[in-house]
Image 1: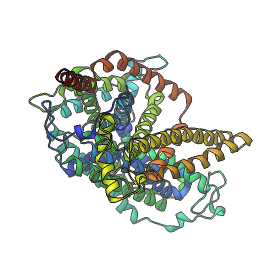
Image 2: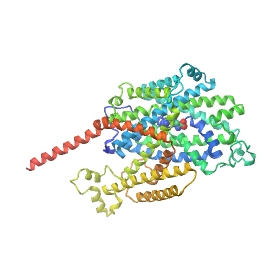
Image 3: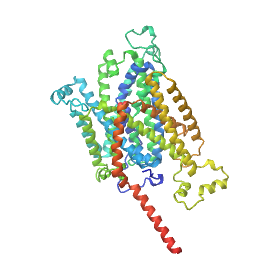
Image 4: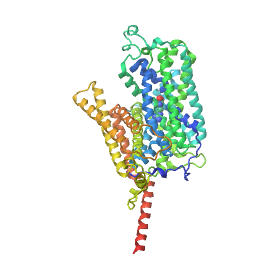
Length: 590
Ligand SMILES: NC(=[NH2+])NCCC[C@H](N)C(=O)O
C-alpha cells in the first residue's frame, strides 16, 4: 500500500493512451484565473468588510494570498517534477505512497463534484434573481421536495447548465479552452471596469471614519482603518482564503500542457498574482467608495450602484458574475475527469475512466460520467450542508502536497544511494565514493539513514501540528485560553519550531527540479500548519461526512485498486525478473 512511483518513471514520453498536448502558457493561466476568480470577487470583500474587518479587508486578502501562495509554490515545484495529469493525486503517489495517493484522489473527486454543483446552483440563483426569482417560485410550487438532505425543489437549470458544459469539455480541449479564455477575459474586464469606475467616487474618509460618526445602531466597532482590530483581520483572512481556492486545476493538466514542467509552475505563479491583484483592488475600491458598516454582505456592488443610481454598472456586475461562475464551472468540470483518468490509468479505478476518445482526444466517457454525477448532485441535494466538504477536500490536498515536497526534498529517491537500497548487494554507492573523494562531510548528502530520519521528523511534525491547531481552535471557540489549552498551545508551538529547525539541519537532496520552493523546510512547514488550522475551523458534521466518504474510498481501494494497481504489477514483474536472474546465476555457478 505504501509503494511509490519513481520520479524518473514519469517522463513526458508519449504513452499509448495519450491526451493531446495543446495547452500553452496563456491557456493554463486562463484556466487558473478562470477557475479561481469567481463569485468571491464580487461578494467576499463586502461580506468580510462588514462582518469582520472594516476597511482592513484588503489586509485579510493579502494574508489569504500569502497562505495560498505557500501551497501554490509547493504545487509549482511538484508540477515541474511530475508532468502527469492528476495534481495532488499524482504528486502523493511519488511523494508518499499508493494508498495516500488514492485517498487524496478520492478526496479531490468529492471537492470538484461539490464545487461544480454548488457553482451551478449559484449560477441559477444569479440568473433568476434580477427577474424576481420566477424559476424558483415555479419549481417550488410544482415539484416540492420535503426531504431533509434534499434541496427544496429540483433545480433543472443547474442540471442543464452542467450537462451543456460537460459536452463542451468532452468535445475537445481546444474548443473548451478557447471558450474558457473568452469567459475569463470578460470576467477580468468586469473587475477592471468595477475598479476604474469606482475611482471616481473614492473618498479616503471611508478608510478613516471616526467612531463618533458611526450611527449607534450600526455595527461599526472602533472606527478608523482597523475597527475590529487585528483579530478581525485574521478571522476575515480565513474567509478570504476560499476566494483563492481553485488554482490547483492547473496542476491537473500535466498531460495536456505543451511544456508542462516549465509552463505549469509559471502559470500557477502568474495566476495567483493576477488573482491577488484583482481581489485586493476590488477590496480597496469597495471600502473606499462606501462606508464599511453600510455594505451589503450578499451583493455589495449592486447595492452601492443602486444607492448611487448607476444602473448600467449594476447590470455589468451581474453579467460579469455570471461569466465568472461559468469559468469556475469549467474550472471544476475540467480537472475532475483528469484525476479519474490518472487514477484509472494507474489501475486504481475502473478502466472506463482511462479511455481516451480517439477523435476528441479527451477522456470522453469519464467526462460525461463526472458531469452527470455533478449535475444530479447540484439539482437534487441540499448543497449548503455539503459546501464545507469542498473546503476540507481542498485543504487536505494542499497539506499533502506540501508534505510531499518535504519528503522528496529530504529523500533522494532516484539517486545512486537509493539504487543501493533497492539492490542490497552493492554496498558502495557512487555518491559515497564521490563524497569521500571530495572529502565532503557525509551529513551534507542525503542517505538512506538521513532520509529515514527526515521522514520521521516530518511525521512527528504533522502530529504536533494537528495538536497545536486543535488546541488553538478549542481556545478560540471557548473565547479564552485556560490552563490546559495554554499549556498545549505553548508546548506544541515550541515543539513545532524545534522540529522545523531540526529538519532544516538535515541534508537535502541535490536532485532539484527547475522550479523549486524557496526556504525549505520553512515554507512548506508553515503552509501545513496554516492549512491544518483552517481545517480545524470546519464543523464536526463536515468531518463525519468526510470520514464516511474516505471510508467508501478505502473500500474501493482495498477491493479494486490494490489488486489492479499497475505499479504493483510492474514491481512484481521486476522482482520476478531479478529472481530469475539470480537463479540462472546460481545454476551457472553450480
Ligand atoms: N475547485 C473549486 N472548488 N472551485 C471553486 C472556486 C471558487 C472561487 N475561488 C470563488 O471565489 O468563488
